[in-house]
Every structure is written in C-alpha cells, then in structure tokens.
Image (tube, rainbow, N blue to C red; front, top):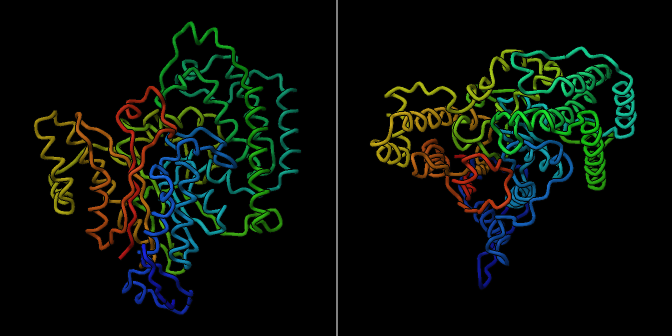
Length: 472
C-alpha cells in the first residue's frame, strides 16, 4: 500500500493506491487507515449531527424483512459502517459477526459484494441467516410455494405435528391443526434450501398465531377471553407472509444482479454461518481470517434484557430442526429458558477469580461492582456472570481476525439496580487489554429499534454506542 498526503484547510486528506504486496506487519506501523476511517464516519454526519440515529430511515427491505426478530440492527447503519471501513481499508474482503442474530450484517455484506462468516448460539438465528443465503431461484420457489399451498388446502388431517408439554396453553387446537398442515406440506418439499425459506414464513406465522402476546418478547399468555375470541387464520397468515418474503427475495435478487453479484442464480461471494457458542469457536485457519468485525452482542443476560431464546421457543417447536443444522437437537427445547441459559450470562455461578480477572482488565467493571455493593447480591452476580461470559468470547473472536482488522461493536448500556451498566466502556477495556487500539466512539439515539413495548429494556435504554477499534 503506497500512501501520499495532501493538506487542505479543514483536514488532512489521506489518499492511497492499494498495493496487495504490503505485509500486515507494515500496516500496523501507520495510522493512515485509522484517520481515513474516522474521516469517513465523521463525514456522514457533517450535514446532520443526528445522522447515526436514522430517524425515519430504518426501513427493512430484502431479507431484512423476513421475520420480526428481537432488537434488530438498522440495515442502513450496518451498510454505512461496512462501506466506510471498506473505503478506509480496501483490503477488506471478509466480514465477521460472532453474534449474527437475524443476519442484518450478513445481508448488508452481501449487498456490498464481500464474503461473510458468522455464528450464533440460537438455532432460529441460524435458520434466518441461511434462508437469506439460499439460491435466488425465484421462479422455482414460486412453483414450490404453489405446491405447498395446494397440499395445505387439500390436507384434511387433524393430527398434531407437535405435542410438546404445554402446547395447548400456547395454541388453540384449531390453530395447532392448521400449523400442523403447513408443517407437513413444507416437510414434503424435496429441497432443503426451499424448506428453509418456508420454515421462516412458518416461524413468523407461529409468532402471530400463538397465545403469547406479541407486545413482548417474553412468553406471556394472553387473557383467556382474548385467546378464545381472537380471529386468527394460520393458513392465510402463512400465505401472506410467504408471498411477502418472495417479493423481498426477488427485490434482493434484482439489486444483487444489478451489482453483478449473482452468477447462475447464486450469490458470488462465500457466505458461511455456524451454530456455535462464541466462547467455544475453533480458531480460524490463516487463509480464512476476516478483515472486518461488525457485531452487536447482547447487552446483558437474556433473562433480564432481551430473551432471544424465549422468543424462539414456540417457532422452533414447529420446524424440522435437522433442516436448520445437524447440530440442533431436542435439547435446545428442553424448556422455554434453555437457549437463554446457553447465552451470555446464562449461568450466574460466579467465583472470586471471575471478579478478580475482570477487575484487573477493566477499571470500569471494578467501579461498577463498587457501586453495586449496597444492592442485593443477585445484581452483582448478574453483572459479573454476563461480563465473564463476554470476556470469554473475546479471545476466540479475535482469533478469527487478521492483524490490523477493524472492529465495530454496537452496544447499549442497560440499567442494573437503577444504575447504568457501562457495557461500552467495559467491552472497550477488555479489548484494549488484549492489544486492540481505540479509534472512535459514536453515540446514537435509538428512536426506532425493534423493542417490545412491554419489555423493561425499552424504557431504560434509549441510546447505543458504536465502538470502533483495530486489532493489534
């Protein structure tokens, strides 16, 4: 990479010609790419200081709109961040998200023509991501959809395809029969990629047809009179959702084709998503290292922030788990809390060693613990367990990045015992303790992030921080 600088009145502009022969070690000796990234990020808010809040600009299109997953990222924000990083460092080819969720970063990476790798501990998240990367065989999928609906309409069976404990609490019998007919029809399709697409539509149908409130991500039963009198039609709902998702698939294909990112109906880049606990991920081979991390980890333990696992429990009961991943089995559905227990902070058993290690790496964590001394002990345990689990993820996550790779972490600071839990500062400390270099910190208001209105977190968190760092 050859650098030349030209001064202007208001800034030092940095331009360069990209040279593939530069070694990573040399890249680490200059801050030119760091200054360029800061300039790119700042330039976006030059005409609008509230730019990063995306007021009125958080619409979801393409695969972003397949399913209402909790606390989804703003697509345009993710896209802007990816493009800014790419402008600053043209070597970026492979993007990494270790907490992939519904796949917002994945979709935006595809829209920008790069490779992607990610993982998540939630099987439903893996299904959503893989459904976004299926072949763009729209005509074939439309024919298959017509066949699915024909089978559903001619199925007069009343056999229930799922009878998990408590099913009749969460579903009216007529709804369960209709969902069973849809499930049987999808399972009859002979192509896994098509089934994955239809399972997503069924998952959203389950969410809309169950007896759980849709105003909260927690499983919360509706009042009895409402359960009995609700006008629901799972088959019509499924048809509408699948039709809508087909339209989004076609629009995504059109955009990708226009950008010459489709070849023989498939995305030209390499996209891979694994079912994996971030703290237990295997070290990547040198040829598979990623150039950019962009992610938004949970902001606290799922039980007291966003219960992703609870939200996924009912949809997963109706999906053929083997179609998601060979590693998914019934153990993920042992209880409504099983997936959340496997997530960050899922186990609150903490030791003094956990506290000591975290204090040594983060003065902000140490200060947080001091402030919680007078509070009930479960508050301190919750904070420590979550921070410990997040800390355990960092080294495995960093092992997937090349030296000098940019990292963009989007986090929010929830409240514990009425006090802010400074996740942004704690995470920054933990990364810097491992050699990362701070580049920028952007505060943003979240006026339109998808939060359930009955979730306490919606009332206590109105801002996020975009942390920009660089791996040492």
